[in-house]
Length: 128
Image 1: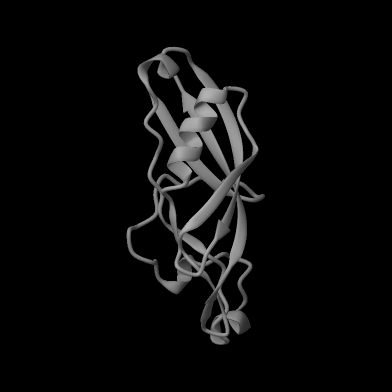
Image 2: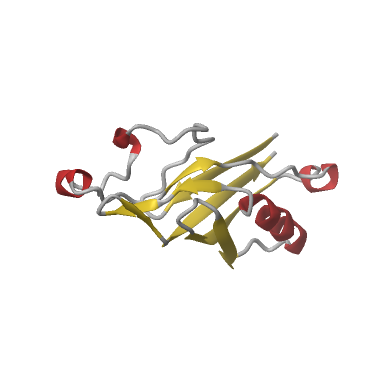
């Protein structure tokens, strides 16, 4: 069985998938204060997170691994992504990068306007 979960910075919180539409304000990061919300400031959050399709040969052996990806999130929600801590498997890293490039975000907001931002996201693999 394969499972992939993502977590944003410490502390680790695992999620399977975000809804297709931007969630209500309550789903914004916990550190966002009431003042920030009332002023139109918010961190970017994922709204589409396709999971990687692993080929059979990568599923044949059980393993657990973690990669860390750095996302540059543009004002339109598109991303530029690099693996800043790849897994030990180059093929898995390539599949992961191809998938992460398809992720889409609701952009960070400042004073009610979308802004460019960055996020580091840990991606957990558990294949058994």
